[in-house]
Length: 467
Picture 1 (cartoon, rainbow, N blue to C red):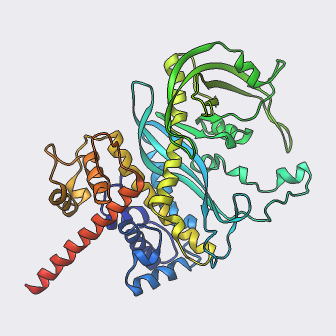
Picture 2: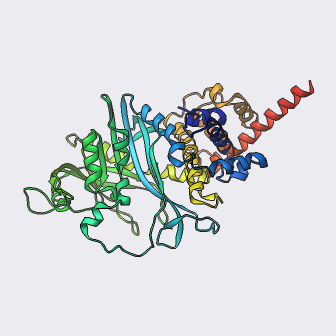
Protein backbone atom coordinates (compact mmCIF):
# COMPACT_ATOMS: atom_id res chain seq x y z
CA UNK A 1 0.00 0.00 0.00
CA UNK A 2 1.47 3.35 -1.11
CA UNK A 3 -0.96 5.67 0.71
CA UNK A 4 1.27 6.85 3.57
CA UNK A 5 4.54 7.11 1.63
CA UNK A 6 6.14 10.56 1.30
CA UNK A 7 5.07 12.29 -1.96
CA UNK A 8 8.28 11.62 -3.89
CA UNK A 9 8.38 7.94 -2.96
CA UNK A 10 4.64 7.56 -3.56
CA UNK A 11 4.94 9.10 -7.04
CA UNK A 12 7.82 6.77 -7.86
CA UNK A 13 5.77 3.72 -6.87
CA UNK A 14 2.68 4.80 -8.82
CA UNK A 15 4.10 6.27 -12.03
CA UNK A 16 7.71 5.12 -12.61
CA UNK A 17 6.59 2.26 -14.88
CA UNK A 18 4.53 4.45 -17.22
CA UNK A 19 5.55 3.81 -20.83
CA UNK A 20 5.55 7.24 -22.45
CA UNK A 21 8.06 6.61 -25.22
CA UNK A 22 10.98 8.34 -23.50
CA UNK A 23 12.49 7.83 -20.06
CA UNK A 24 12.67 11.60 -19.52
CA UNK A 25 8.90 11.91 -19.96
CA UNK A 26 8.36 9.27 -17.29
CA UNK A 27 10.73 11.11 -14.96
CA UNK A 28 8.83 14.34 -15.57
CA UNK A 29 5.54 12.54 -14.79
CA UNK A 30 6.94 11.24 -11.48
CA UNK A 31 8.17 14.71 -10.56
CA UNK A 32 4.86 16.31 -11.47
CA UNK A 33 2.85 13.73 -9.51
CA UNK A 34 5.05 14.27 -6.44
CA UNK A 35 4.50 18.02 -6.66
CA UNK A 36 0.72 17.65 -7.00
CA UNK A 37 0.61 15.27 -4.01
CA UNK A 38 2.78 17.68 -2.04
CA UNK A 39 0.74 20.76 -2.93
CA UNK A 40 -2.83 19.74 -3.82
CA UNK A 41 -5.34 22.08 -5.34
CA UNK A 42 -5.55 21.14 -9.00
CA UNK A 43 -3.68 24.15 -10.40
CA UNK A 44 -0.17 23.71 -11.75
CA UNK A 45 1.10 27.20 -10.74
CA UNK A 46 0.32 26.30 -7.12
CA UNK A 47 2.22 23.01 -7.38
CA UNK A 48 5.15 24.50 -9.33
CA UNK A 49 6.11 27.94 -7.97
CA UNK A 50 9.31 27.92 -10.07
CA UNK A 51 8.71 29.01 -13.66
CA UNK A 52 11.07 26.43 -15.17
CA UNK A 53 9.22 23.59 -13.44
CA UNK A 54 5.83 25.01 -14.39
CA UNK A 55 6.89 25.38 -18.01
CA UNK A 56 8.16 21.77 -18.04
CA UNK A 57 4.80 20.55 -16.69
CA UNK A 58 2.90 22.45 -19.39
CA UNK A 59 5.20 20.99 -22.03
CA UNK A 60 4.66 17.48 -20.65
CA UNK A 61 0.87 17.77 -20.77
CA UNK A 62 1.04 19.02 -24.37
CA UNK A 63 2.72 15.86 -25.65
CA UNK A 64 0.44 13.21 -27.21
CA UNK A 65 2.57 10.43 -25.69
CA UNK A 66 1.43 11.53 -22.21
CA UNK A 67 -2.08 10.21 -22.79
CA UNK A 68 -4.66 9.50 -20.12
CA UNK A 69 -4.43 5.72 -20.55
CA UNK A 70 -0.62 5.57 -20.59
CA UNK A 71 -0.35 7.63 -17.40
CA UNK A 72 -2.84 5.47 -15.50
CA UNK A 73 -1.90 2.01 -16.80
CA UNK A 74 0.75 1.29 -14.09
CA UNK A 75 -1.76 2.16 -11.36
CA UNK A 76 -4.47 -0.01 -12.93
CA UNK A 77 -2.06 -2.95 -13.22
CA UNK A 78 -0.90 -2.57 -9.61
CA UNK A 79 -4.51 -2.51 -8.39
CA UNK A 80 -5.43 -5.59 -10.45
CA UNK A 81 -2.46 -7.52 -9.03
CA UNK A 82 -3.56 -6.60 -5.50
CA UNK A 83 -7.05 -7.99 -6.23
CA UNK A 84 -5.53 -11.37 -7.09
CA UNK A 85 -4.81 -12.05 -3.42
CA UNK A 86 -7.33 -14.20 -1.51
CA UNK A 87 -10.17 -12.17 -0.05
CA UNK A 88 -13.37 -10.27 -0.89
CA UNK A 89 -13.21 -7.20 -3.12
CA UNK A 90 -15.92 -4.69 -3.98
CA UNK A 91 -15.61 -3.20 -7.47
CA UNK A 92 -17.74 -0.07 -7.21
CA UNK A 93 -18.61 1.86 -10.38
CA UNK A 94 -20.04 5.32 -10.87
CA UNK A 95 -19.93 8.23 -13.31
CA UNK A 96 -19.40 11.88 -12.49
CA UNK A 97 -19.13 15.12 -14.45
CA UNK A 98 -16.06 17.35 -14.34
CA UNK A 99 -17.36 20.88 -14.78
CA UNK A 100 -15.20 23.46 -16.61
CA UNK A 101 -18.07 25.70 -17.69
CA UNK A 102 -16.50 28.79 -16.13
CA UNK A 103 -13.18 28.23 -17.90
CA UNK A 104 -14.07 30.14 -21.06
CA UNK A 105 -10.64 29.75 -22.66
CA UNK A 106 -10.71 25.94 -22.48
CA UNK A 107 -11.34 24.22 -25.80
CA UNK A 108 -12.28 20.68 -26.95
CA UNK A 109 -14.78 20.11 -24.14
CA UNK A 110 -18.21 18.51 -24.50
CA UNK A 111 -21.60 19.33 -23.04
CA UNK A 112 -22.58 18.10 -19.57
CA UNK A 113 -25.73 18.23 -17.48
CA UNK A 114 -28.66 19.82 -19.27
CA UNK A 115 -26.44 20.92 -22.15
CA UNK A 116 -25.56 24.37 -20.86
CA UNK A 117 -22.39 23.21 -19.10
CA UNK A 118 -19.03 22.20 -20.58
CA UNK A 119 -16.64 19.60 -19.28
CA UNK A 120 -15.63 15.95 -19.22
CA UNK A 121 -17.25 12.72 -18.07
CA UNK A 122 -15.39 10.38 -15.73
CA UNK A 123 -16.35 6.76 -15.04
CA UNK A 124 -14.45 5.10 -12.18
CA UNK A 125 -14.18 1.53 -10.90
CA UNK A 126 -12.93 1.73 -7.32
CA UNK A 127 -11.46 -1.49 -5.88
CA UNK A 128 -12.02 -1.93 -2.13
CA UNK A 129 -10.78 -4.87 -0.08
CA UNK A 130 -13.24 -5.89 2.66
CA UNK A 131 -11.28 -6.04 5.91
CA UNK A 132 -14.04 -6.76 8.43
CA UNK A 133 -17.77 -6.73 9.12
CA UNK A 134 -19.57 -4.78 11.82
CA UNK A 135 -22.20 -6.34 14.06
CA UNK A 136 -24.82 -4.74 11.78
CA UNK A 137 -23.30 -6.62 8.80
CA UNK A 138 -21.77 -3.53 7.24
CA UNK A 139 -18.39 -3.90 5.52
CA UNK A 140 -15.25 -2.06 6.52
CA UNK A 141 -12.53 -1.84 3.93
CA UNK A 142 -9.45 -0.18 2.50
CA UNK A 143 -9.07 1.27 -0.97
CA UNK A 144 -6.63 -0.59 -3.18
CA UNK A 145 -6.97 1.85 -6.05
CA UNK A 146 -8.69 2.16 -9.40
CA UNK A 147 -9.28 -1.08 -11.27
CA UNK A 148 -10.04 1.08 -14.29
CA UNK A 149 -11.25 4.54 -15.24
CA UNK A 150 -12.62 6.13 -18.40
CA UNK A 151 -12.55 9.83 -19.25
CA UNK A 152 -14.24 11.18 -22.35
CA UNK A 153 -15.85 14.17 -24.03
CA UNK A 154 -19.50 13.90 -24.95
CA UNK A 155 -19.93 14.58 -28.63
CA UNK A 156 -22.87 16.00 -30.55
CA UNK A 157 -25.36 18.71 -29.75
CA UNK A 158 -27.33 18.73 -26.49
CA UNK A 159 -31.05 18.22 -26.65
CA UNK A 160 -31.03 16.66 -30.10
CA UNK A 161 -32.02 13.03 -30.42
CA UNK A 162 -30.61 10.99 -33.24
CA UNK A 163 -33.01 9.83 -35.90
CA UNK A 164 -31.89 6.26 -36.30
CA UNK A 165 -33.21 2.76 -36.56
CA UNK A 166 -32.91 0.19 -33.78
CA UNK A 167 -30.18 -1.62 -35.73
CA UNK A 168 -28.20 1.62 -36.19
CA UNK A 169 -28.45 2.36 -32.48
CA UNK A 170 -27.20 -1.04 -31.30
CA UNK A 171 -24.33 -1.03 -33.80
CA UNK A 172 -22.86 2.37 -32.88
CA UNK A 173 -20.70 3.10 -29.79
CA UNK A 174 -22.84 4.17 -26.82
CA UNK A 175 -21.99 5.64 -23.42
CA UNK A 176 -23.80 2.80 -21.70
CA UNK A 177 -21.11 0.39 -22.90
CA UNK A 178 -18.80 1.73 -20.17
CA UNK A 179 -20.59 -0.24 -17.44
CA UNK A 180 -18.54 -3.28 -16.38
CA UNK A 181 -16.23 -2.80 -19.37
CA UNK A 182 -13.32 -3.08 -16.96
CA UNK A 183 -14.35 -6.70 -16.38
CA UNK A 184 -13.42 -7.46 -20.00
CA UNK A 185 -10.03 -5.80 -19.50
CA UNK A 186 -9.13 -7.17 -16.07
CA UNK A 187 -10.66 -10.62 -16.47
CA UNK A 188 -12.10 -12.57 -13.58
CA UNK A 189 -10.88 -13.34 -10.07
CA UNK A 190 -8.56 -16.29 -9.32
CA UNK A 191 -9.54 -19.14 -7.01
CA UNK A 192 -9.89 -17.94 -3.43
CA UNK A 193 -10.68 -14.35 -4.42
CA UNK A 194 -14.25 -13.01 -4.66
CA UNK A 195 -14.98 -9.94 -6.77
CA UNK A 196 -18.37 -8.26 -6.36
CA UNK A 197 -19.46 -5.65 -8.91
CA UNK A 198 -21.57 -2.81 -7.41
CA UNK A 199 -23.50 -0.27 -9.48
CA UNK A 200 -26.53 2.00 -9.38
CA UNK A 201 -29.67 1.92 -11.56
CA UNK A 202 -27.89 3.15 -14.69
CA UNK A 203 -26.18 -0.26 -14.95
CA UNK A 204 -29.47 -2.16 -14.92
CA UNK A 205 -29.33 -3.72 -18.39
CA UNK A 206 -28.28 -7.04 -19.82
CA UNK A 207 -24.61 -6.54 -20.74
CA UNK A 208 -23.12 -5.70 -17.29
CA UNK A 209 -24.83 -8.74 -15.76
CA UNK A 210 -23.74 -10.99 -18.64
CA UNK A 211 -20.14 -9.76 -18.39
CA UNK A 212 -20.03 -10.50 -14.66
CA UNK A 213 -21.48 -13.98 -15.16
CA UNK A 214 -19.10 -14.79 -18.02
CA UNK A 215 -16.00 -13.80 -16.03
CA UNK A 216 -17.04 -15.32 -12.69
CA UNK A 217 -17.89 -12.13 -10.77
CA UNK A 218 -20.74 -11.70 -8.35
CA UNK A 219 -22.79 -8.54 -8.68
CA UNK A 220 -25.22 -6.26 -6.86
CA UNK A 221 -26.99 -3.82 -9.19
CA UNK A 222 -29.86 -1.60 -8.20
CA UNK A 223 -32.83 -2.47 -10.39
CA UNK A 224 -34.70 0.05 -12.50
CA UNK A 225 -36.46 -1.87 -15.27
CA UNK A 226 -39.56 -3.96 -14.63
CA UNK A 227 -38.47 -7.09 -16.50
CA UNK A 228 -40.83 -9.69 -17.92
CA UNK A 229 -40.62 -13.10 -16.25
CA UNK A 230 -39.98 -16.41 -17.97
CA UNK A 231 -42.59 -19.18 -17.67
CA UNK A 232 -44.82 -16.92 -15.58
CA UNK A 233 -47.24 -14.11 -16.17
CA UNK A 234 -46.39 -10.71 -14.79
CA UNK A 235 -43.21 -8.80 -14.16
CA UNK A 236 -40.34 -8.66 -11.68
CA UNK A 237 -41.53 -5.84 -9.40
CA UNK A 238 -44.96 -7.32 -8.79
CA UNK A 239 -43.49 -10.75 -8.10
CA UNK A 240 -41.08 -9.42 -5.48
CA UNK A 241 -43.77 -7.26 -3.83
CA UNK A 242 -45.79 -10.44 -3.17
CA UNK A 243 -42.87 -12.21 -1.45
CA UNK A 244 -43.01 -12.48 2.37
CA UNK A 245 -40.97 -10.10 4.52
CA UNK A 246 -37.70 -11.73 5.58
CA UNK A 247 -36.91 -9.28 8.35
CA UNK A 248 -36.22 -5.69 9.34
CA UNK A 249 -32.99 -3.73 9.73
CA UNK A 250 -31.62 -0.21 9.76
CA UNK A 251 -29.73 1.50 6.93
CA UNK A 252 -27.56 4.56 7.51
CA UNK A 253 -28.20 7.20 4.85
CA UNK A 254 -25.60 9.90 4.32
CA UNK A 255 -26.46 13.54 3.83
CA UNK A 256 -27.49 14.70 0.35
CA UNK A 257 -28.47 18.11 -1.01
CA UNK A 258 -31.68 19.05 0.73
CA UNK A 259 -31.65 15.96 2.98
CA UNK A 260 -29.83 15.50 6.26
CA UNK A 261 -28.10 12.25 7.19
CA UNK A 262 -30.44 9.83 8.93
CA UNK A 263 -31.01 6.16 9.73
CA UNK A 264 -33.85 4.45 7.87
CA UNK A 265 -35.80 1.50 9.28
CA UNK A 266 -36.54 -0.92 6.45
CA UNK A 267 -38.26 -4.21 5.78
CA UNK A 268 -36.64 -6.65 3.38
CA UNK A 269 -38.14 -9.13 0.91
CA UNK A 270 -36.23 -11.61 -1.24
CA UNK A 271 -37.01 -13.88 -4.15
CA UNK A 272 -35.55 -15.80 -7.06
CA UNK A 273 -36.73 -14.87 -10.55
CA UNK A 274 -35.97 -15.85 -14.10
CA UNK A 275 -36.28 -12.89 -16.46
CA UNK A 276 -36.41 -12.75 -20.23
CA UNK A 277 -33.30 -11.81 -22.17
CA UNK A 278 -33.50 -8.76 -24.43
CA UNK A 279 -33.47 -8.61 -28.19
CA UNK A 280 -30.02 -7.84 -29.51
CA UNK A 281 -28.16 -7.96 -32.78
CA UNK A 282 -28.13 -11.62 -33.84
CA UNK A 283 -31.30 -12.55 -31.95
CA UNK A 284 -32.69 -12.70 -28.40
CA UNK A 285 -30.27 -13.20 -25.50
CA UNK A 286 -30.62 -16.07 -22.99
CA UNK A 287 -32.80 -15.60 -19.93
CA UNK A 288 -31.21 -14.55 -16.63
CA UNK A 289 -31.74 -16.16 -13.22
CA UNK A 290 -31.45 -13.49 -10.53
CA UNK A 291 -31.78 -13.14 -6.79
CA UNK A 292 -33.81 -10.04 -5.91
CA UNK A 293 -33.66 -8.16 -2.60
CA UNK A 294 -36.25 -5.44 -2.04
CA UNK A 295 -35.43 -2.88 0.66
CA UNK A 296 -38.37 -0.63 1.54
CA UNK A 297 -38.46 1.97 4.31
CA UNK A 298 -41.30 1.97 6.81
CA UNK A 299 -42.29 5.04 8.78
CA UNK A 300 -40.18 7.55 6.87
CA UNK A 301 -40.03 11.03 8.47
CA UNK A 302 -42.36 13.69 7.09
CA UNK A 303 -40.86 15.41 4.10
CA UNK A 304 -38.23 12.71 3.50
CA UNK A 305 -38.28 10.50 0.42
CA UNK A 306 -38.74 6.89 1.62
CA UNK A 307 -35.84 4.58 0.86
CA UNK A 308 -36.64 1.92 -1.75
CA UNK A 309 -33.96 -0.30 -3.30
CA UNK A 310 -34.59 -3.19 -5.66
CA UNK A 311 -31.28 -5.06 -5.72
CA UNK A 312 -30.45 -7.61 -8.42
CA UNK A 313 -27.70 -9.98 -7.33
CA UNK A 314 -25.99 -13.31 -7.89
CA UNK A 315 -25.24 -13.77 -4.19
CA UNK A 316 -27.17 -16.34 -2.13
CA UNK A 317 -30.09 -15.16 0.00
CA UNK A 318 -30.73 -18.33 2.00
CA UNK A 319 -29.77 -17.00 5.43
CA UNK A 320 -30.79 -13.69 6.95
CA UNK A 321 -27.15 -12.73 7.56
CA UNK A 322 -26.48 -13.18 3.81
CA UNK A 323 -29.36 -10.85 2.99
CA UNK A 324 -28.10 -8.27 5.48
CA UNK A 325 -24.66 -8.34 3.92
CA UNK A 326 -26.08 -7.77 0.43
CA UNK A 327 -27.84 -4.65 1.73
CA UNK A 328 -24.71 -3.62 3.62
CA UNK A 329 -22.54 -3.97 0.51
CA UNK A 330 -24.90 -1.90 -1.61
CA UNK A 331 -25.06 0.76 1.11
CA UNK A 332 -21.28 1.01 0.69
CA UNK A 333 -21.71 2.09 -2.95
CA UNK A 334 -21.41 5.71 -1.82
CA UNK A 335 -17.68 5.05 -1.29
CA UNK A 336 -17.09 5.70 -4.98
CA UNK A 337 -19.03 8.95 -4.61
CA UNK A 338 -16.70 9.76 -1.73
CA UNK A 339 -13.79 9.12 -4.09
CA UNK A 340 -15.19 11.57 -6.64
CA UNK A 341 -15.64 14.10 -3.84
CA UNK A 342 -12.01 13.63 -2.84
CA UNK A 343 -11.02 14.18 -6.47
CA UNK A 344 -13.04 17.39 -6.77
CA UNK A 345 -12.94 18.92 -3.30
CA UNK A 346 -9.60 17.53 -2.19
CA UNK A 347 -7.44 17.28 -5.30
CA UNK A 348 -9.19 20.25 -6.95
CA UNK A 349 -9.54 18.57 -10.33
CA UNK A 350 -12.03 21.18 -11.57
CA UNK A 351 -9.74 24.09 -10.71
CA UNK A 352 -7.43 23.56 -13.69
CA UNK A 353 -7.19 26.44 -16.17
CA UNK A 354 -5.54 24.44 -18.97
CA UNK A 355 -6.81 25.50 -22.39
CA UNK A 356 -7.17 22.20 -24.24
CA UNK A 357 -9.31 19.20 -23.35
CA UNK A 358 -6.61 16.57 -23.92
CA UNK A 359 -4.24 18.42 -21.57
CA UNK A 360 -6.93 18.51 -18.89
CA UNK A 361 -7.45 14.75 -19.34
CA UNK A 362 -3.74 14.07 -18.72
CA UNK A 363 -3.85 16.19 -15.57
CA UNK A 364 -7.02 14.37 -14.45
CA UNK A 365 -5.12 11.07 -14.81
CA UNK A 366 -2.49 12.19 -12.29
CA UNK A 367 -4.98 13.73 -9.87
CA UNK A 368 -7.13 10.57 -10.04
CA UNK A 369 -4.36 8.67 -8.24
CA UNK A 370 -3.70 11.58 -5.87
CA UNK A 371 -7.37 11.32 -4.83
CA UNK A 372 -6.95 7.59 -4.10
CA UNK A 373 -4.06 8.49 -1.79
CA UNK A 374 -6.20 10.97 0.11
CA UNK A 375 -9.25 8.72 0.27
CA UNK A 376 -7.34 5.79 1.72
CA UNK A 377 -5.67 7.95 4.35
CA UNK A 378 -9.13 8.74 5.70
CA UNK A 379 -10.32 5.15 5.43
CA UNK A 380 -7.33 3.76 7.27
CA UNK A 381 -8.29 6.00 10.17
CA UNK A 382 -11.75 4.44 10.13
CA UNK A 383 -10.97 0.78 9.33
CA UNK A 384 -7.71 0.49 11.30
CA UNK A 385 -7.87 3.39 13.75
CA UNK A 386 -5.56 1.90 16.39
CA UNK A 387 -2.94 0.46 14.05
CA UNK A 388 0.46 2.16 14.55
CA UNK A 389 1.80 4.34 11.76
CA UNK A 390 5.25 3.38 10.50
CA UNK A 391 7.40 6.49 11.09
CA UNK A 392 9.83 5.52 8.33
CA UNK A 393 6.96 5.34 5.82
CA UNK A 394 4.97 8.39 6.91
CA UNK A 395 8.07 10.48 7.43
CA UNK A 396 9.83 11.13 10.74
CA UNK A 397 9.98 14.87 10.01
CA UNK A 398 6.21 15.04 9.51
CA UNK A 399 5.53 13.16 12.75
CA UNK A 400 8.00 15.37 14.60
CA UNK A 401 6.18 18.49 13.40
CA UNK A 402 2.81 17.08 14.50
CA UNK A 403 4.31 16.16 17.89
CA UNK A 404 5.60 19.71 18.43
CA UNK A 405 2.31 21.20 17.35
CA UNK A 406 -0.13 18.90 19.21
CA UNK A 407 2.02 16.64 21.44
CA UNK A 408 2.65 12.98 20.73
CA UNK A 409 -0.30 10.76 21.80
CA UNK A 410 0.34 8.61 24.86
CA UNK A 411 -0.12 5.41 22.87
CA UNK A 412 1.96 6.59 19.90
CA UNK A 413 0.85 7.68 16.46
CA UNK A 414 -1.97 5.64 14.92
CA UNK A 415 -3.88 6.01 11.64
CA UNK A 416 -6.66 7.88 13.39
CA UNK A 417 -4.53 10.15 15.57
CA UNK A 418 -2.33 11.12 12.60
CA UNK A 419 -5.34 11.94 10.42
CA UNK A 420 -6.93 14.04 13.15
CA UNK A 421 -3.66 15.89 13.78
CA UNK A 422 -3.25 16.62 10.07
CA UNK A 423 -6.85 17.88 9.87
CA UNK A 424 -6.28 20.11 12.90
CA UNK A 425 -3.61 21.88 10.86
CA UNK A 426 -6.39 22.55 8.36
CA UNK A 427 -8.85 23.93 10.91
CA UNK A 428 -10.53 20.80 12.28
CA UNK A 429 -11.57 21.37 15.91
CA UNK A 430 -11.37 17.69 16.98
CA UNK A 431 -13.99 17.99 19.69
CA UNK A 432 -15.16 14.86 21.46
CA UNK A 433 -18.23 14.26 19.27
CA UNK A 434 -16.95 15.68 15.96
CA UNK A 435 -16.23 12.30 14.35
CA UNK A 436 -13.73 12.07 11.49
CA UNK A 437 -12.73 15.27 9.68
CA UNK A 438 -13.97 16.21 6.21
CA UNK A 439 -12.03 16.46 2.96
CA UNK A 440 -11.41 20.19 3.02
CA UNK A 441 -9.79 20.27 6.45
CA UNK A 442 -7.76 17.12 5.71
CA UNK A 443 -6.47 18.53 2.44
CA UNK A 444 -5.67 21.97 3.88
CA UNK A 445 -3.88 20.35 6.80
CA UNK A 446 -1.91 18.01 4.54
CA UNK A 447 -0.83 20.91 2.36
CA UNK A 448 0.37 22.89 5.39
CA UNK A 449 2.20 19.89 6.80
CA UNK A 450 4.00 19.34 3.48
CA UNK A 451 5.08 22.99 3.39
CA UNK A 452 6.37 22.69 6.96
CA UNK A 453 8.35 19.58 6.02
CA UNK A 454 9.81 21.38 3.02
CA UNK A 455 10.81 24.30 5.24
CA UNK A 456 12.58 21.97 7.66
CA UNK A 457 14.39 20.32 4.75
CA UNK A 458 15.54 23.69 3.37
CA UNK A 459 16.82 24.77 6.78
CA UNK A 460 18.74 21.52 7.15
CA UNK A 461 20.30 21.93 3.73
CA UNK A 462 21.24 25.52 4.53
CA UNK A 463 22.85 24.40 7.78
CA UNK A 464 24.91 21.81 5.94
CA UNK A 465 26.14 24.40 3.43
CA UNK A 466 27.09 26.82 6.18
CA UNK A 467 29.13 24.08 7.88
